[in-house]
Image (cartoon, rainbow, N blue to C red):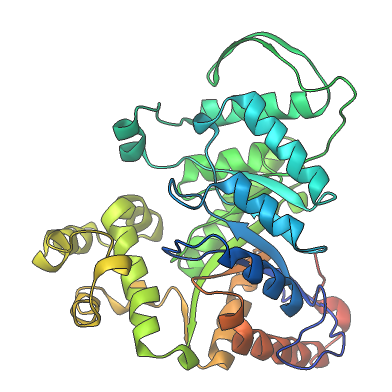
Length: 378
């Protein structure tokens, strides 16, 4: 189901200082990439809100990017910006800890927080001694959280998420905390439609893949007796406009896609309908086998230039590059594929300013082309 570009009225702010809530349909990640200084998030969150972005997403890494600590920090220095973990994993914390953390963040932000969950990485879980995540576990864990948020006492639970004799937060609780699910493959997309309040797709989805994912999610929601239109679906668009320079393009597009292909390329290739042989050849190339780590973190500009020659143009085209105006048009393509929001991936909020200005102008032009209700905001 194609969705038009949202109609979000300009609030009269000059470019570079967009009004509060100017872009509720757009989001970005905090501490994008291999950031190691969590204090930088404080300025990023303030800047994201100042620029009018709607949501700040926080991925988790087991180093200096612990999701709940970051969400608390971002929530404390903002007043209107939505905060979403996208994603943490249910199997890394006891359900009471996760449920209590979500309530704390929900109240700290006055309802701006969403608990985002994902499947994580099987290979990592194997190494650190955690069970691999299944759909049944996710469904069970989300049900436990919601029961606890409603003030229920969970007695004698024995399900896919674990055995728990007694779980309780507070009988007086009646918290409505949105749950976000990150999803790539069809099984997780269907699960998201069945249980989630919002869904985050993955970087380097083609437009056709995005449209199919939206259809899968909303169909699953309808089959489960839910309102398909009530789910908020976010695409994740890698954005590097030309003002950032060639090195940024190499690292943020070539390096990032190469890193994904290193880690979990099989599922990304499969959902996009790309050739497995190309992935196999890529992984076997000496530039990749000898990289010594994630390409976007360790590869030199010369190596990234050579790596680009290993990747089909259509694979890298699942992104937004070139002029800020062209990037704005690529954002519009995401909405036409049926999503409700677009996460501009791989940038600090400040780096997104040229693209936001171009998107602001793009929306004005779209609004002037026809009736305002052509572009309803979800």
